[in-house]
Image (cartoon, rainbow, N blue to C red):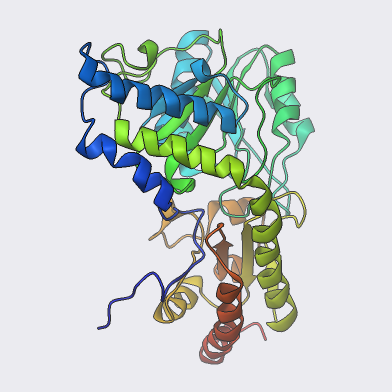
Length: 390
């Protein structure tokens, strides 16, 4: 079998992970080959590693309008999410967590585990377009709530939540607020300078950085109890020797993302819109999942009624096209997406839903090939399916 190269590949699964930017790789190399000291060591040789960590901290802070001292490096978005919630429960002594029914599994499964341990967890519903009711949230957040956690952007549909409004409500009620901004960071403008957000999670591999590095924003003067207890690293907020090379890469990725925000919201958005408009106009029985306007510029979730998404993915894979049926963290599950279930998408649609997520590395040629391949794939599968919705 011929090996598939990057030149053969059309990659439209950037919400799952992204390719490492060449500039990011170059930034990392010296800390793998030349300046490999432990950044916590006191001798001069360690200065280069320590300086790389602090420079990266400044760049990640700049991406989201935060102060460098408010950025703490972690291993991933999941750790950042878990750390924020676990800290709030310990610091406040309260027993209630409020979140939504469409969160990433890093929040959803953690909340479900907490429920088994005797904590009270509230999963707020969304409407058919994936939007959250502010009235429901206001009612749920009360004096017993330790923390409210709402994702900034849904990883499957791209739907954006009114995070600043929600953070303001929580502030007025004296409740800590956390947002999983793993999908939002670097795709839309985030400015925490005057925000009421207490905690915010980021992940490097969604920003063209390697897997295995993330960050947690902790608002200055916010009380925080460490999730990983060990040495004095990260000013006592997160034990464990820093992953210097990946942190340096994360800093460069954040710098690149900040410089490409306009491109994300113009050229990348245009590619997404072009493919989505083509599918909805030219392929029968297709439906957009989620609202059209308030969503990420790179994400499109489309339901192909009457066929199974895994069959579509297999045929697209044969054409060297990568996309997904939802979150990579739930791949292999036979159940329809929990996000689409929460939106009350009919089973005949949710079973045939695909997510297309673009990045700055996608081109017009990618869309052109998708237009050439996808209609034939759908037509062939529907001809074979007794459950066809035609």
